[in-house]
Image (cartoon, rainbow over all chains, first blue to last red; front, top):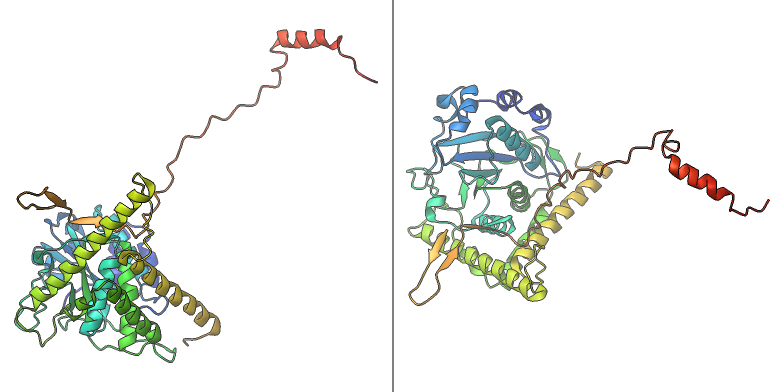
Length: 339
Length: 68
């Protein structure tokens, strides 16, 4: 058990300081464009005092925090939020919590966000998820292994290693979210009885939540025969080509998620791959800045226009699939399916 | 901030996080600039309030050649 309160209780509490929280109550199970549901964990690296009133209001630390043994190894607390139907609702929920506690969550270096997507992805898809998140984020981050160490890093039965992408520990799972199946029928429950693929965002943004939700949907539909299966397959191929163009295909062979068949040394193999990606992205960032300097003589704050840069290519890929899904969803809505 | 330094080379400061240059920065909402002061309409009796101009205009009327 990772939480013992209902979303309704949380929303009722938030309404006392965030007037828009009640809108979430009616819409929190609504799924946008057939994308997968979104769960969130908030790891607090400071003393977490600004969460005190919220935790007390939900029943106290024993009911809210101590039932959950999982957290960032450096964190004072990990608040597990009940899942919601869309990235929009997840962002709204965080904004309401920000208003309640009177402190920012997005972009706060003392808050590490973890985004949970339903369904366990394969090791290959987990690698694509981690790489897509990193390159698509509005912030390029450097990591140490301490940033990725959780209380389950070396757990006896559910060891998750030191990774960016983590599987669930077979805890609670809420299946009551719509799933668009391959025939275009909207099923009332997710096809997974259990299982999640989580991503440790770190200090995160609204864009991170939207991007991870999009990519996790494409990959899950590709692996579990959902409505967006063909787009998911196409996305995988395009991501592999992108990495190939930049001579980064080798990153996909690293163990981005810890599987049950893990071997000694895999944490280091993963971290070496992550550092290679980080170094490449930082190098790209500097190259883009230098080119801008050459083109304009002086520094200007304009978006990158690199024809072949990996960062811009990733943005284009995410925009392309977001547009494709939105356009197809509108057609589906007009044609009356998924039923 | 991570500082990488090898003997004989310039110290290199590597920030822990930098903005992704390929992501357009959100445009900040335009700040509320103070509006230009609105010119108040002249009071109805403004003309008579300036007798010197009125008198000058009256005096000039005699010099105008208006076709009838």
